[in-house]
Length: 134
Image 1 (tube, rainbow, N blue to C red):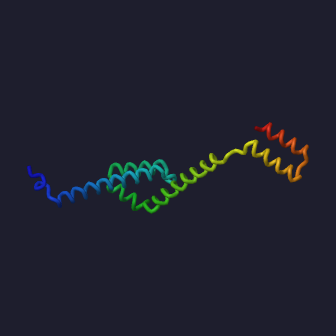
Image 2: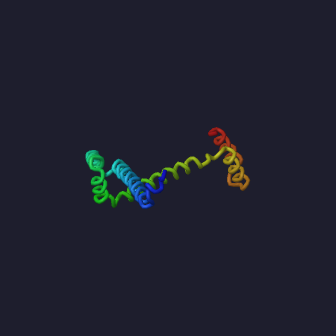
Image 3: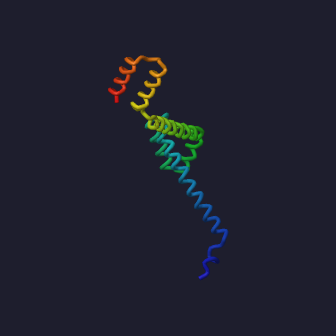
């Protein structure tokens, strides 16, 4: 069995090249389909038209889409990534904020009373309000 002689090195190279081009084609096709679906500026009919064009005539449909609307594909993707990052940041900020505990508020009230900024009666009323909230 002479397998190496049946499939020369140049044929291996061409097979690998075609395989990677095929993979790149599917990645491009999926990116175009995702961009069509995500685009808020297109109406439902326009999305349907582009999807039918890309599915029925895939090579022509994808290349025409990239020529016609490819300039803004990156912008739309960057805007969506930015919106996702902003949503994540706001969620982290909301969950990371520790609610002020009654102990912290009482400690602040005690410091204010020690400085003489409030009287003992004001301290007592504020302390009751803090304890009533928590």
